[in-house]
Length: 357
Image (cartoon, rainbow, N blue to C red; front, side):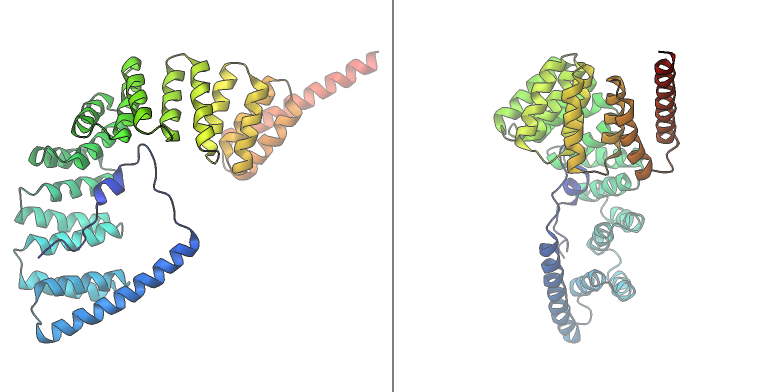
């Protein structure tokens, strides 16, 4: 029996340090749903026909359960899985296929139960360890995730996917030293992997090894010169190194390659504020808001920058929007009320001064 689900969950589920997968258009999603349903119905029909003549065909039983599950018939699927386990209780692939299915449906606790059973039956299988690492990562149990990924890598030290995913967990848990070591291994396995180079650069930056970080970003740019996120990460590294002018240059290059990411505008504007370039920063904050008028960070940052320019009245407008967007946030409410109080106080003072004249 082969693994019914032949997808790369490990990289898909965990490697997100550099970019997230693009979402499909709504029309495409609808078409895919119809296509999948037709596929499921036809496949299930074929499997049931086989089972009429081969009722104990273990592979077909498992696959029938998987298709039933994907159709939303979980109770029926469980019946097929139970039958498969009863017929072939020592076949780890039965449990691995069921685990993969629960993993795909984000039912990670159940996936873990089946993966552990599969591991009992196939204790030196790196794929099972890696999937356990991925499942524990998804439920935020990082120590367990690290343990299983490390075991997977010991069993298969050349598997780049395992190395990248483990490195990403170390990076996320702020263990930048271990993350850097693993990203270095990933780059050694594939010198054209620009994403691993970017992640390695980020890890070096966190370790204050900026020259090494810059070298990684330069290599990534040589491999993928039109990839905007390398310039964004490069800019952040330059900013942390105390080179805001060079950081701004990198951010603007990132923007030239992608005008639709509001985060770049905000990061660029924040750096411009550090340089006391308030007017330019305000323009970038406003562009971020044009892209997403529900971005609370942009509204608050814009309000703060307007305060620095002495424009309290306009800052109140953006603070007010932020309070509407997140009414339960006490900190935002406090900033808004402070600005109102300061504006009222300055207005009264101005009126009083005019009366004294």
